[in-house]
Image (cartoon, rainbow, N blue to C red; front, top):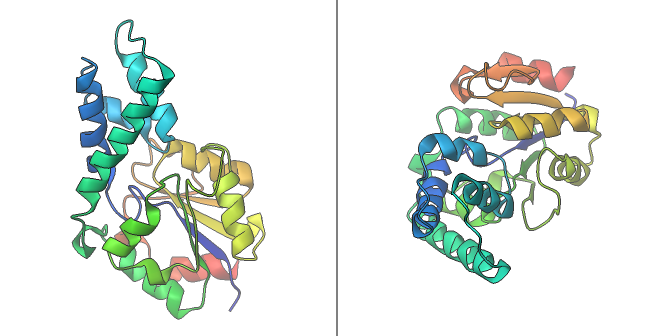
Length: 219
């Protein structure tokens, strides 16, 4: 059997931490007098922490704060977020993910995490699947946010695979774009109407069969 690099985003792909990001960002927005909704939160998918704050500030009217204040808010947001994820356990792994990870592990396929999150390792530890991953590339390892393909290109290199031999699982438009720019096979997890630039689309991992994975590996 051939080997390919299977690169997974974290938030919204393996676990649903978006709800915790939302709560933490909402506290930041409220402190600035900005109304922050679930719809607004969609704008932050796959986006770095600094850019996320810029987007939130743009939702307000004439919100002008110093760089020092911005840094304080970024630190506070992360502290609140860490309190939420500290309570996570393996019940928060999204449906079907374990079947795919088990199949790839059993067939000796390199499994890489490629995420903008700077908290990827503690989250994987909390949900007890850190040992599935051969390597992790997260927000601590790269400087360019998606749709820049840096995180996935570094992941492929760690797996000793070329871009064309790499498969990316993503739930964000920016992530799919990054995978496509890198020349990798992009698999959208979520609504096909939103992730319409992905090569393949699934609502969730429960829809991904072993036959499909075998086909990806042996192409």
